[in-house]
Length: 263
Image (cartoon, rainbow, N blue to C red; front, side, top):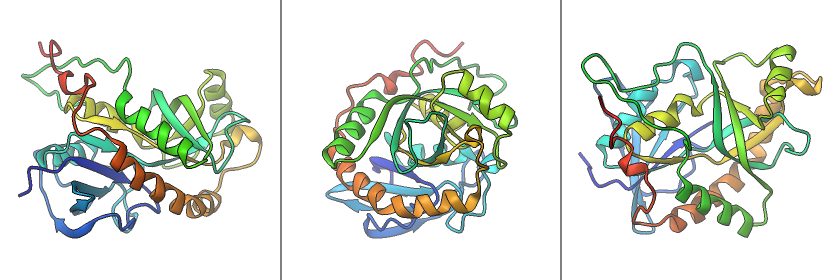
């Protein structure tokens, strides 16, 4: 099995068939935490070995609350992945963050209920820091690529993660807005904190698909998919340039996340 994969990409809706990789190979894996969401596609892009895993499965059959986040992160770790790029779809909690724009989450609020958020189990207690849960090096690269391509990106966003798969009630949406959060989604937690625990750099490029229901217009899956469809090619273009932009040597602290974290 490959152990020299450098970059992992968690595809969301519309991204899993991005066709970024040359000489792709499908790898079926198992982990101590069960099977990942689907087979992992490994290939070469501009001399760098990349792994691609659709977090909802290739046929989009796994809802966000049932994704095996631990297995997905563990599988990437087993392949040698040290950087994860995680495209995602989000709703907007602010007027100025418009559908069709991109957003860069730097903080999160976790309102999930049933997800296992750690590899820490009986006999091994880990208290990692997620004060800054997203890798600053990858974030800097994302900002540069998106701006160079002339797209709108909202930086320093706080991401509200809800359990899903349902959308928010109006009362919930207005509450999330009252926290001064910027965007809302269903997948980045516990994905990002598990990556940190695995000492893997992780960052997301989020596509804004709609205004959340605070805007008095009910959110529909059809609306989300239509906006996503329009943005797929833009996201692919960002990923192509981003892979080239990410430094080959890590200068962040993500690789040292377990230092002084274990009891």
